[in-house]
Image 1 (cartoon, rainbow, N blue to C red):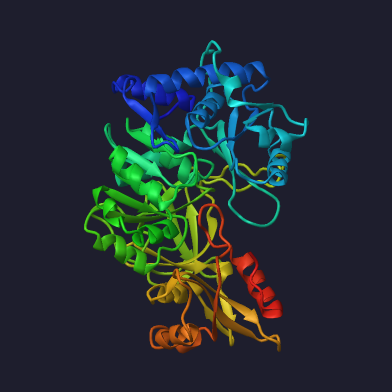
Image 2 (tube, rainbow, N blue to C red):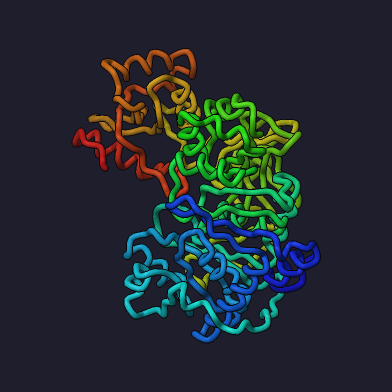
Amino acid sequence: MMTGNLVTTLHDLATQNGWLNRQAFAVHSATRTFETCTYADVFAQAGAAAAALTRHGAGPGDRVLIALPDGLDFVRAFLGTLHAGAVAIPVNPMLPGKDLAVLLDSAAPAVAVGGPALARAAGGRWRVLAPADLAGGLAPPVEARGPDDDAFAQFTSGTTGHPKLVFHSHADPVVHDQAFGKPVLGLRPGTVTLSVSKSFFSYGLGNSVFFPMFSGATAVLEPGQPTEDVILAVIEAREVDVLFAVPSVYARLLAHPAVAGLRRLRIAFCATEALPAVVEAGITALGGPVLLNGYGSTEAGSTYVSNALGASRTGTVGKVMPPYRVKVTDEAGRELPPGAEGRLAVQGPTMSAPAATLAGRPPRDPVRWHPTGDVAVIDPGGFIRIAGRSDDLEIVGGVNVHPAEVEDALRNLPQVTDVAVCAVPDARGVSRLVAYVVPEPGGPGEDAGKRLIGRLRGTVSAHKVPSDVVFVTGLPRTPTGKLRRRALREAGAAYELTGRWPT
């Protein structure tokens, strides 16, 4: 059981297992070359960063906001913050300045680390260090911290409302690795990983930093938002074993002429949103990687439900991983039996409620049940199927419709690259179901919408068949690929009024 600073835990693990001279990270560049560093380099550079952060006023318990792309600068800033006993808060460095300013004000950091865009957003109100400012210092001793002390925090991925922070302790990544990393991923020295999701998200942070470092593996870091060409080239050049991505990325990879390059993977892991059946079938049909679909949250800090090698079921997100527990309840909170559809709740030692203000942050409560916001079914074998978000339910003609089911059926049809379904009011104010479809290159043919609706009939129940299909250039999604349902509804309502789709 862990008893101190996470940096000490990782350093001791690398020392005891002889990993210090092994390659820890390889950073891909636009020139298709890779900057690499060993585990020993990582800890030395984190120590130098800790010296600089301490010198500029970041002490135990203070917050350090980090707005850097995935790369060695990010790793040294993140681990250097923990080394100093401070709390790392990674954020998306590509956000507009006004959004970065909001996050700075919400986090109230003692120090921030980032580029010129962050410095401009800070406007002199917050001290901002450049990555170069973290190099060259004499490393202080690793600050003593307890397992329950804060190590890092992340903003929830919601797209509306005031930003909320979720805090995680030095012990939480140890729990994540024991629950998910070791039993599901089976990383080991020599394994090479690549995460399309970035480290400023909980999904990406575990994939790119924690799970590889707990296993002596090598993580390939991609600073930019990689195209399918880049993903496939990196997989080949670095002999990647495990790829972490989201369903929309896998869908695009399946459409790529060189998709056969995925066959060299051992595991293709997928999470963050519903996995369409056509994508699941497509990856499986490649005959190479094992596709594992999982489920987690920022509040948990990682994946806590997952399919695993030898324990996988199509169309599900897998089974809950101990020490986490899940249950399905009715709207009154009463637990429902296996096979019944209801609201999914989770309990576990790393669960933290989001805090809109630091002063109003609720205490950790490992026995509290946290609502996930998803509607789910747990079958008698323990496998969990996510029906959709509880707030994604559309009511059409007085009947509940889960958009994910209709979207999944539409993705199986030709000419559909991406799709989202929502209810919009017509001229009478009566809701009708509309499918917004991104067509394949070349655009939709004549009467394509009518043909899609015709082919959908008989595939889903009659009340779930959209009354109309609107072809659009793109759908509102978050940087992780999640569909922004509220923005979709707003765009759909605007289209009904103006006939124009927001760009």
